[in-house]
Length: 394
Image (tube, rainbow, N blue to C red; front, side, top):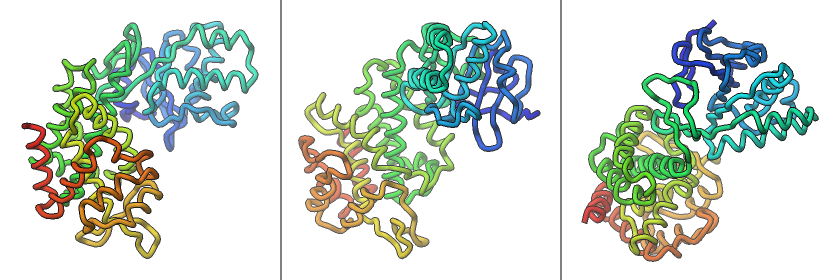
């Protein structure tokens, strides 16, 4: 037996606050995890015997579980789809009701993806057609989202699962919440990594306690990103505060290189859509989001490959590895932060292999980035950061 706390996404599940829910996971050292109304969490249990319990109505997949099935899931299921299909088949054989399934994996539309994956398992395993019909009609896969210490579930009605401190929020459509999470929380993380590293700050807590950066981030969140999520306008201001608190406290110990993991792809998915939307809506560019791009270019233009073949950035005490896609790192390694700003902006923005498009096609972006790169070279990163904040406030 183990009384340790089970972190199932942001939902603080444990023996005291889990009701009617079977929680499964495949983390190292744990084949499955159980939380129920009266039982303590257990390690290495056979969850199949619990699947037939009449009081179980929910199956929650731990956030580390892969939804996609594997070929060996029939005999020894390790994915959420394989484990869920196996457990549901046992309930079907006993003539029991279906379950509500809640995947916690951090992908959009994880509910429909789980449903499709379970159907694929049933077909591949050649299970009875009646089970396939029962699987589709008697079970519900709800999409979920972990967002700033809260767990959002897409459903028309609340489920019999309790969580400490009201950590569960029920919504009818997760789409705007997913977009807000990606652009505001994800975008804030990208800005913190790029600007913080450029200014010599080492941890997320140091970045978030830096007054010039907090001002930049606040202006970006409230004035440049939030308008692209009008569906949640009433809550966007309070959400911005939660983003800042979450990054400073929950992520405070995060440091480079983890802090800079896949910065290019994260910029493309989190920051670039908000930047493009702002330009379309206002016929002008968002200064703070543009600064994020300029900071990323200036930071990566100093990348070089060391004697071990690893792309690194120079640091006060040596060098720091850069955890990003090799093609992007190779492209930036051909540039230099000492290049004329016009040449650096042109070379970086026009590289389709890095961004998937030519960023110069965004009206005015090349001129804005050129000006910000010039400010960084002549005045320093902090002065350029403060100038971007002032432009947003004007």
